[in-house]
Image (cartoon, rainbow, N blue to C red):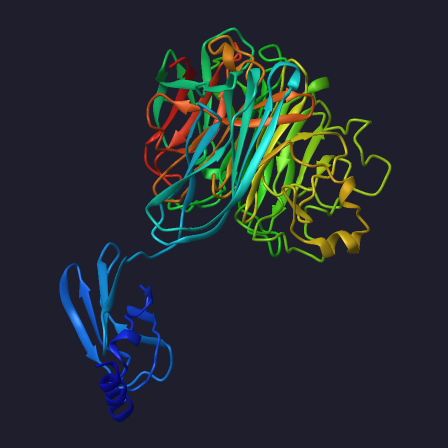
Length: 594
């Protein structure tokens, strides 16, 4: 019988059944944009015209969609492309039939768009387990991860593990692990997944790890109906009276949880015309004199029209007086201290805060646009301009005086500058206990950062974005050694949020677990819908800050616009559900125990 088969195969070109094989492998890929399915089959070919793929069937969601026959297969690998109209979630099943023997079948679920990789649950037990989830539609590839633990009694807990997840399909998750941890006492778990980093608290007893809960807070609504509340002041007068600056130019008064009908001051007629869909200009800063109410002056920072050539607008620092009625300012008392030309509409800074010595500190952005491309070196590294800096002035002068120990007094550079190399300082504050100045600087494409500002410090922009190189050539051109730049105490990527919002070091009594930590947040992880976030930094040892998430007891689906602090050092959150300075969804919420 075998001899007959061999003769037949020699005469007809038909391979013996014992030497015929089904297709060994099949790979499928789908291009959602072009609506094409590619099929690749690895096939052991004996005679190309006899032992080959001769039929391919494609099913969509269990129904036959198309079939195609083939007369030849030139080599061991069969590849063809088919036009298949499908959408995300459809299941495509392909069966390839061999001309002599058997078939192979494989399915894929259509995915599309971009991957979105997140850190999921982190759990203890015998070691630490971390779930990595891809909540996007597209497949994620080459995901680098690491788990690091530090702390314990006498700092003896110190282990790490890491690796790479080759592929994580959209809508799926995987788990990575760090093995048993031996020790005793509290420690910190730092998880990194690509550019995303989060820290967690845990406690180990011998070899068993117990996760400690993240700090949870409540957000109690104090007042609402604002347009876009961006700043709040509670001057040291012993009264429960808050002043809320809204981006559209109105400063409202909140007394006993009610917003007074009449505004404290309306600057809307002094502002540039704002784009209600989205704008970074407007009334951006408010601060009362530190000797208030004996000295009844207060200060505002707003965006005004400019007649200067090549300027979008000008940022105005102005002084006003409070009238005999503490709920009313004197609108005729304006005294302009400073005008700063702004070439673009974004990156305006605007924070005002009085610090040590009674001096006023002013945050100024880099002039806007992407990449700080104004002039040959940009504005952040140009100390001959006020843009991209924190200024320090004495408001008791005419129009102001320069503190004698400002870093550029007597040398090249603007005397007002206290620190520079900033992109868009969106909120800073002084810690009342240590007098350290904490500043949040909004990043460019990838990184948001928190800095502790020192006199004369260069904070790197546009040479650096956070701790990452952005324009190395500029450092060479200016002869700047990277080691001379001030680095942030913490940074996070745009996988976590898009625009950092600075807050305060908490020195209140409502939340003792937060005492001494720096509370801040992020405007939103997306433009639409609003997804603001709240964080805090804890200095676990001198110079080593770790970031943790603050979990509101109720969902916080809002744009985080700013923070406030009252006379008792309790914190407030300013937010809105409107992308631009429009509507009345803005409110002020007090941070309380959950």
